[in-house]
Image (cartoon, rainbow, N blue to C red; front, side, top):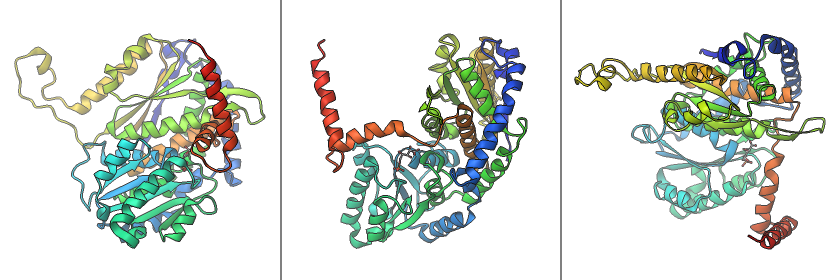
Length: 464
Ligand code: PA5
């Protein structure tokens, strides 16, 4: 497994002092980065944050692999019901390991389809259910809280669909991933005999991809989760190294933090040049946004921190976003995600057409072209004083993906420590959720309904 991080184009020598990091700035902040690592390691060793331990929980992986082997070939579709951190990891893994939809190949019991119900758009849920055969579907409902409105409502629909078609046997076709002691998903799972896997209490949703939240869907679609864990374990060891050169996660966290707080780069564009990493870009968008967008520091000072993550796909988005990136506000940092070996070169036929704009490509390959496009975009951005960096994965397989996901989680945790914020909470999403509960008539949330009604009254008084 090899992942490389090239930070050259983040430096002042390449993009100028106003936008790039000087040697003096890097030297000044290196001790703070090392303190951030030590602080986070202490919290992790004390058991407060559990994601660094996940790659070493081999008993859990064995239990999941045994379950996957037991049910294998009895389904051609795995239907995930979950949202946010309970869905995006499965999507990143499926997209990474089997290629992007809709070009994954023909689905069968040996190569099951993954359907992720992560939204309550009625036409989406209806169409998805319509497309599945209940006798050949395995449902996995995932919710750490066990009570998320979107997940519970969709699950009630899917459960009813399964029960109508399969009667009492429906419970055998449903697995639940939830907390051990918390929430009512565990209650219904016990009542209806679902197979249950637990999410450790000290692992938050967006950091849970290497817990059963991501491992179970991955194993059910045939991924080798041992290799995933092995890659992540290897990366974990290097993420604890107290050496900026050897520790990519720490170096990336420090450089991204400095570009953000010292050079005003308030937007980070995650720019994979690989369709297989497109799902990971969306997973990362949640990780970076929800973890680092915080109102207050740990000591209670108002900070309103946050670097807006944007997902762009190379080379596709060169034709939709790069104009803005080159000439718009210089408030962005670009993180290219490159892949060395795509598994297929994509040979372009050698035969010539006699047409100048066609023939220079004859005999070349798509790998050469996508690589040329990426390095050219990096060069053009650099020439325009736009800081950028590149993570390169040798290939996208279980080991590299496990390692890359773990690297990005560590980077996020270290950035949180540098900012002195708690990267593991998400209080900001609570108010909207409570209004929804109030509007949907959940007991105990009446005051939120009243607050919502007051808000509506205020709106009505606004004259146009
Ligand atoms: O990162 C998080 O904690 C959140 O995004 C959750 O994953 C999301 O809100 C879903 O929560 P739950 O798993 O409880 O349904």
